[in-house]
Image (cartoon, rainbow, N blue to C red):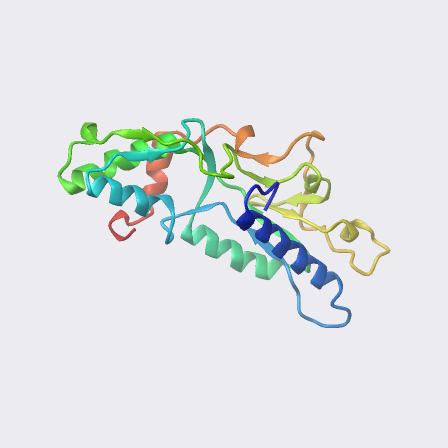
Length: 217
């Protein structure tokens, strides 16, 4: 987790730190320990889609905390593939982050209303959107890599890999092989955040949802 504002976010950050430190301290043990960072997994248990589906089914207003809220999204298969690919590439101590589309939550809710309302024999225009304000600790934008981490960040076509600082020291026992990756070249103030990305748009959201069976979420 990057810049956590909640207890859950802080525990994720500590979990990463513990795993990375444990890999560094493993000595002659062969176990390789690395981490992955997820975006919001569409269609997973507890995700936004089942919540909105039930609100529409019950004829309730669809709740929105802020019209400008943005999030990174990935599918369940994206999440599984990230884990599997990371297991193949891991040398120890890395954090693997998928390159993901950014979605404006308001656009997502509008698309879900258009998709779900007819399934429950409701007029999409009859489903209202209610602004309820942000929850405690909820951020307007989502960060997945901090500016400091980009100093140690490499990439492939579909993911970023954040290495621990000691991995860059070729004379240190914890040094890693970067030959299969490209070094990320960014401004010093850059971070991997939804605030820096153009939202996907409603048509792009529909294409993502086509890969999901909305009746099962």
